[in-house]
Length: 257
Image (cartoon, rainbow, N blue to C red; front, side, top):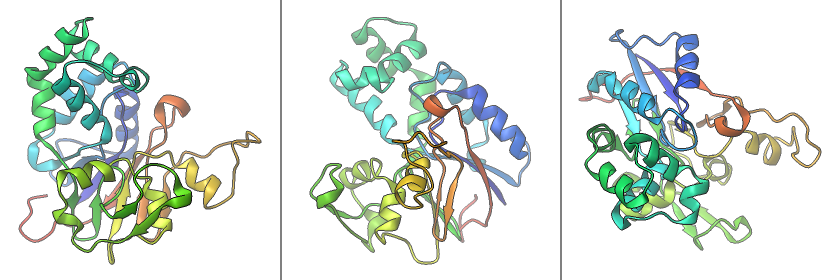
């Protein structure tokens, strides 16, 4: 089977479609599996086309991973109003684009009943595993203390039972910088973890030391590939780079994909 993996589409349907075509994806080919690593919406102008495309792929040949932006939208729908970060993250704009409404209460209430959006959310999963790979958004759940983004005080420990993590731990994992967690040793033996969420140029600056934003050296947003990890977020909204990675693998025993 060939897995065509994209990450952080963020509503850029045209860019995604172009990358998939360049990679040779054919949604009518029974050997082709489409994988989205989450954050399908927000920031781009084509969220409806993105969702329509993803759901047009037969269910047995699509894998839709839930991202932190899917969480953000669900949280906004549940409280019926937006926070300021929903504006900067593009969540509000996505709600307006999908519903055609410009009042937040109306848009969020419409989304609660929106057939396309709800079908997409219902098909999202925390992770998917094949014989040789694990697909996630940020990273697999692990021990991290304290919560937050201050890496000076961060402790990453692998958790063997991460597959059975509860909702809170999966939501936290979706915010993780997978490249940082990988560098800290949080890995799944015998597997390659595919992740998005954090732009790949980060690893080239912090881990590889091949570019620095301070000197404005050319940033490289291509897939970052090392043993046990393939990071794919090209930071499409900022860089214009959209990555599609092709991975040949087999489903786990008993899986249809």
